[in-house]
Length: 313
Image 1 (cartoon, one colour):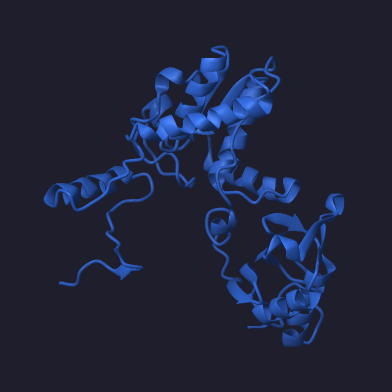
Image 2 (spheres, rainbow, N blue to C red):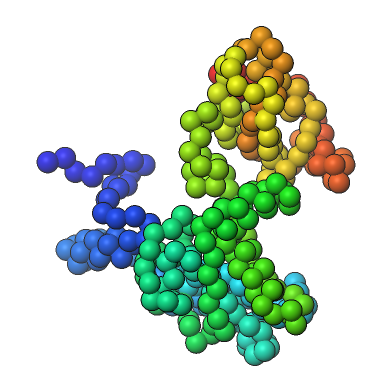
């Protein structure tokens, strides 16, 4: 019988269930550790007390950056480490500060002792993590998958913050707390990760009309998703282009996109693209027109050529 698949030197062990069945994966992990003691290092992020202890530094950072002027902190429970550590640090400075943990409305284990599947990866894993210090929480806020995804899309579209569904649910929950507590003047939450990994999944849905692109040349890295080349489909679509994690609008990029599609389809097209460009900071000026999200590449011809090749391939 073949063993588990191996990649980059690691064996991937699959367990039944979905994202809300992490208890099954943890049970299998414990079996493996018990069978071969001393072989494995187990971080135990859900129960290792070092997790919330380390996150107290985040609470100190929030206290410093807000000058101690905040009323509440709101965040998805996840492993329990971030919200618990932050709450402990902030309440040590001011016990009046409120802390709220967030869980998916479809899987409200804490607030309703009810299990269910949902679409916000990384939270609501089907367990109440031991690292979640409920004694530090002043309330539990629920928000649905649809609310989380809608907010994540809004953050990208309106604020230039391309983040994941868990960040979306954090912002939704923070707004719910604000609505419930008009006396609060400042509420802190966290944008936990990038939305890049969700472009073809939870955030934008399954998109067979989008293809993944990756290209690197001359110190310029390009990756993301673009509309499949072809002579059918709309000639224009939404375009989200990020340079060094900042959303931008740049004529060099726009012209390269149009040229690549025009060569392939024999008509001018500026179709849907979601691209991430990385280049050394000294090779691009991202402050040409901050309010207009314009940038200036010191080697515009390189950017144009790499983009054209990336889309053309």
